[in-house]
Structure formats: C-alpha cells, structure tokens
Length: 162
Image 1 (cartoon, one colour):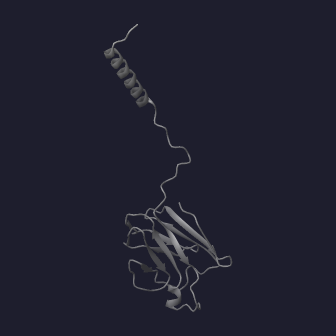
Image 2 (cartoon, one colour):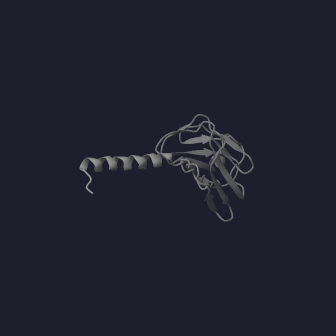
C-alpha cells in the first residue's frame, strides 16, 4: 500500500496536533513539599559582636559592635520596615534606606549620624556583647530572611539563610 506525499503530511500533522492536545490536557504538576521560597538577596554579613578594646560603655565602644546587613543581589532593595533583632528582643527598624546591589550597611549599637554605609541604633548599652547571641533579620512583612548565631567562648558564627 502506497501512501502519497500529501497523505503523509496530513497524517504527520494530525499526529503532532494530537500530541499537543494530549500534552495540553495533562494537569499541571504541583510543586512538591520540598519547594522553598527564593532565598533573599539581603542577608546578615559580618558581625562584630564584641567591640574591640575596653568595654567602658563609651559611644566609641558601643559603635565598635555592629552587624552588617548585605545585599548580595544586583538590584537595590528598599530596607524600610526591615528589622534586626537580638536574642533579648532589642530591635532596630530600618527607616527608608535604599541598599544598592552588592553593598552593605553596618548597624551600630551606639549613637551616630546615619549614612548609606552606617546606621546607628542610638542605644546607651551593648546589644551584641552577650556570651551567646543571635541576630535575626526580617523583611518589612516580618518574614525571617537570615539569622546569625555566635558564642563568645567558642568564637564561631553560624548563618541560617532562609
């Protein structure tokens, strides 16, 4: 039995369209339980949790302890409403800082004049100098973006990116 060239084209077209219709009729596959929200570009960077020198509660000493908030992405991120919280509940709320891509800002404990690279909690006590502490970074909706923990005796820093 010989099939003409035109008939072969028609059959090929029908087979291809049936395949497309069949594929379109398949249900979308739902993401499994292991799907995670995309990791935030804004994370905790370096931490200076014990100010260098003498702990005399001077403003210089207070500003010697800080937590760096870092934008690892290409795009600028508005930090308005983001918070950085210590284990004891001490919280710093960002007010309208635009953090450029691939840049960082240090959050100091003491008093100072805010800039795009340094912001100040305006406190008169140490925030991060505990023997064991955790810094938690949340976005403006309260979602945890990152945590960093340390122990002064062990001098280690662990991050838990979300």
